[in-house]
Amino acid sequence: MAQSTSKLTPKKIEAIKKELLAVKEKLMMTTKDSDSFHIDRNELSDYLDEANVNIQVNQLHRFRNREIFYLKKINQALDRIERDEFGKCQDCDSDISFERLMARPTAELCIKCKEEAEINESSKIKRSSSIGKTIDDIGGASL
Ligand SMILES: [Zn+2]
Image (cartoon, rainbow, N blue to C red):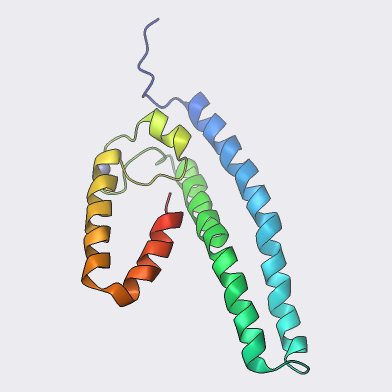
């Protein structure tokens, strides 16, 4: 039976959901470390210079931001599966191809809208170099 490989079936969604849950579990393990660091921070500030603690927290945030950002994306993707909206472009409501979803299960936009968003994003960076770095950091983690 000839079937379009781009079509999402409940079975394919189930496979993606499993993958998302596995990645989520892994990320939860790593982000848990940053939570305990926040608790330690109050104790540490009694002994360490506050600025020094801040530097450590900032460094940790830089490492963790990507994970936390991705975790949010995964939760949103799982949400969309629950709401039966998974695989729909958040922008134009057209179907996101199964191949794209397999490569990026957290994709919220179809390839066309994603490309448009990326063009907008890069022109934003060019316009403002000061916030450009922040946007670039977020963009790098965007999936
Ligand atoms: Zn779209």
